[in-house]
Amino acid sequence: MDAKDPKQLTEAEWRERLTPEQFHVARQAGTEAPFSGEFHATTDTGIYRCVGCKTELFRSDTKFDAGCGWPSFFAPAELATVTEHEDNAHGMRRVEVRCAACEAHLGHVFPDGPKPTGQRYCINSVVLTFEPAPE
Image (cartoon, rainbow, N blue to C red; front, side, top):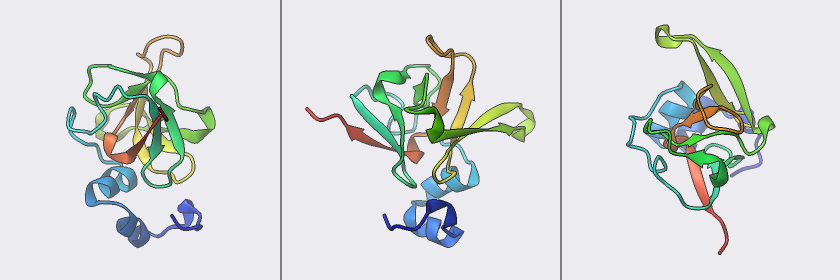
């Protein structure tokens, strides 16, 4: 990664940095097909980071199987690492989740998750990288 602030990258620079699928989801608010992502069934211990800027977004101890086909977490690593935005696209009212550091679209958050938060952060695998915990 270069030292340039990710929020200052041009669309051309993002296209160079990301694969076409990553660009579609992260920069154009796309969605990967359910059950197709690399991390939807992962149970390994570690940290999930933003593919665009490497910010720590979620930890494996908050991941759960929601049965929806996307990685689901009941909380971000830190509340300040994600931002929430009203999303009325496709005739639905949802809350979009973005990386606070680079504004990448991550997925959506729903109020139907487990305790302790009751939240389900439904995140596209393609916008995540995984850093296994040291053994």
